[in-house]
Length: 288
Image 1: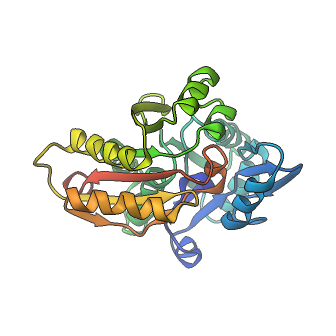
Image 2 (image 1 turned 90 degrees about the vertical axis):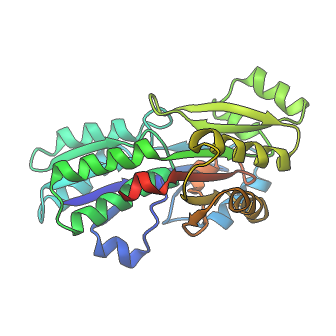
């Protein structure tokens, strides 16, 4: 069994591990300043944010086409027709639809498309769990059950300084976004698990208070006496803010942190460089 995913899942494997675990990444695309870039191929995150800071227009992102997925499925089916295609939320991207269409175009492949109903590290955790389970010899059904378990156990919270990119991308209404910008409000954003869309869970007047608010949201989910957590802090291009969030989480919970990482630049295009977030789950729910 092989795995196909998209660059928006922020799968934590190195290139060597990608080959070892038979994980194949299909890039999303961002267009900025009249030029399109395939993530991980044509541009690096730091280069993208430099362009974002100086560009006159706003970025536009696009999912891989069905044809791109079909090419990958067709090639992989030559060696193993069983494929898990694991992707960022259908509530935030058309990637799942492209993958589903492509699966019907390649009858020689047995493709199972998984909608993670989230994005970035929470999606990447599902990809990683599936890859390790396959390598350990788990059956198709067991792998699907494990991925569902990881998805149900995992939450993610984000906050950021500026809202213009979310407004432009239609992720929040223009009127609400404009009002929040005027009031200098920092939202605390989660991803709900039914449709996999953004939800506003709180707001603060400063970035520091938004970070504290995110930690309070974690507490509401795990309880005052919650056990150890597994967590990973992510950021667009805001290392200082990410460290602030990581320190606050560490001060309030017993945490096994995965290495901090940058968000997919295609996700960053929708939020700007200030976004920071934390993916977390009770350790007992994902390790048992």
